[in-house]
Length: 395
Image (cartoon, rainbow, N blue to C red; front, side, top):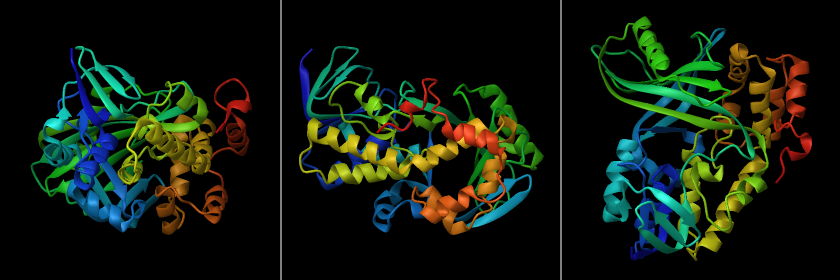
C-alpha cells in the first residue's frame, strides 16, 4: 500500500500526544501532522486532575479549555485525621479532549489505527498502511516493567447521576476510612454538579489486576452508606497507573530500540508517587512546540533528556514509594499517607508539584515513623530487582 507523508506522526491518541498535537496546530499550523489512535476517540474514557501549583499561570491559561470543573480546596479523610486543604484543584476530561482537540485535528486524527511497527521515520499499520515522517513520537501508554520496579495505583470509577443533591462542597481526594483491601485503599470523589459525581475505588497495590465487579460493588456500597441514591450510571473509567520504586532509566530507553522519541507514560514522564501525568504532559508539549527542528533525532534527544532529568529529580519520591510498598504491611499502608497529610499545607503543595525543598524532605522523614524502622531501612536499601543494589537508580 502506498505510503502517506507528514512532518510529525504521533502514535497513540492519549493525553500527552493529544496535547502535543493541539499545541502544534495552534502555534505551528504549518506543521503537517497525523495522530494514530487505536480506539475510537482521543483519551479513551478518563479524567486527569491536577493542583493549582502544578502548572505556571501561562500553562493554566492554555489548558483551561479542557478543564471540565475546578474547585477551591479539597478534603482528605483517614481513620485518625480529617482535613480540608486550600488551593484550587482542576479536572480535565477525555470528553473535552475529544471535543476540542479532536475538532482541531479534523482528518489529521486517524482512529481505529492498529500499529504493527514503529521506527524513527516510519509507522506501519496492521492493514499495511505506511506513514513516513520527519519525526515519529511514540505515546502508547504503558511504560512496561522490564527495567522499572513498579507498584500500581489502580482504580475503577463510576460517573453517577443521583436522585438528590450529594451535599459535597468539593472533592474528597482520599477517603481512607473505608476497609483496607488489596493494599492502601481509598475512595476518590469528584462532584462535577449537584447531582453528578465521579466516584473511584482506588488501591495502591502490588499488581495491576482489576477486579472490576468487586470494585463496582464497593463503589455502590460507598454511595449507599452516604445516602446517595443513584438514578443511573453514566459511564465508567478504569486504569492502573505505574508507581515507580526503582529502576534503570538508561536501560529503559535503550531497550525500546534506537531513536524513537517518546511521550507521556511511555517516556516515564509522570509523578512517581501519585501517577498524575497531566503536568508533565503540558510541560512536554510546551517544550516540543518550541523546538526548532521537528525531526526524530532532535526530539529523541529532547524526550530522553527530559525523562532522565525527571528521573534524577524524583529520587526522593522513589524512596518514599519503597517505604510505602516494601516497609508497610499492605493493610497498614494508609498510615504513611496519614502521616504525610499532617504536614504543612505548603509542603504538601510542593510535593504534588514535584518540587519539595531539602527542608521539606527532612520534614517528611522526621517525626514518629508510620512504619517499623527496621523494615523502612531494609526497603530503602533494596533495589527491587533481586540482582543487588548496583542496578538501583542507574542514570
